[in-house]
Length: 438
Ligand SMILES: C[S@@+](CC[C@H](N)C(=O)[O-])C[C@H]1O[C@@H](n2cnc3c(N)ncnc32)[C@H](O)[C@@H]1O
Ligand code: SF4
Image 1 (tube, helix red, strand yellow):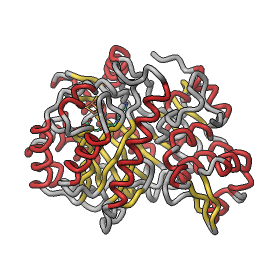
Image 2: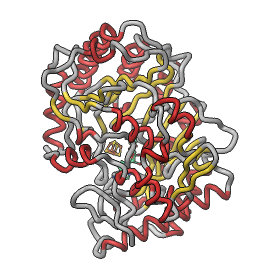
Image 3: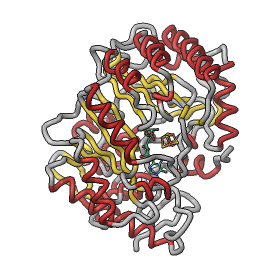
């Protein structure tokens, strides 16, 4: 078994080191001192195809496996105060940006549909200050219990093109094992409402690696999801060790996840679904839908206390935590904040980090890295810049050089969560290792 250069404390032979959906991870962000003015941060940034992201850090339940920045049981005073703060932030960010054009938008969480229909109208009004919601793709995350017809109707009327619902499993004993209070009947009713209201794209999230899940029960969940003919499916390997059964021997859980990954992938490919990345599968003939953001190149404006913003030189956000008490504290601070014209916490990218980011984000997509595009942006050759790392992956059969691109093989894609972390810079790794969870 090959040992990769991976974060401290990890089982360096596991294919499941970490989900790299953004580079660098927020645990590499630090307090910025002095705090830069947003007007300066954005001054030289291209502003003609930005991504608008609004983060809603509320949920009706706290699932046992989830480490996203979110809290449960927010009373109406808090959701109102949160929207008030979002408006103050939107005004400050709008002033700092000046003239800007947005190519796509998303409401993420937590669970944005924790907000009521009236609150979602307010959220859309707020987003409209930046982006023409009827004209750009808009993706919204939802959960079965909160995907109610009144909320979905508001979202459809305001131009939502993609609804993504967390289901995780269609087997009630599995959702119970994952500590997610949810019943199959509730899930089917929510999917029925989503299809009845009508959106261009439906995505269903499923999880594999749950205690008690078998190849047969995994296929059963996949087929139950496929009955809704979703335009997209996200298959997530579980990342929080089950409390019982599996995990006594570390390899056992890895083997279960790898086996279920292969079963899920082959099942979807057999039905003609296209694999976009390790987790994402797209129904044939549905196109990209435009809600995918070209994260290697485009800037992102994030609003809300869990949202990141990206410019070429700086990634920034608010404080980060996972523990329930700390998350509540950060949300409470956010709703009291009056001064949104500065970046508080962040990470400055130099040329090496920009190259790494581009490499990681491209390589983890099935299409891989387009070598000419890399050279156009950075003036150098990706294969030469990262020769040692890429040769290492090629030696494991995880990567191949083709004319015009560098791509992961099928086995490489299966090991995406080991490849991504192995490409972190020593600086990012050191920051992540020294991050003290609050
Ligand atoms: C924002 S949620 C989706 C919307 C909504 N909050 C819900 O749960 O229905 C994002 C998705 O990330 C996945 N996820 C979160 N934590 C995970 C973990 N520890 N392991 C695997 N997948 C996870 C789940 O599939 C979840 O649906
Ligand atoms: S999985 Fe979804 S509903 Fe569950 S805690 Fe995470 S964000 Fe909230």
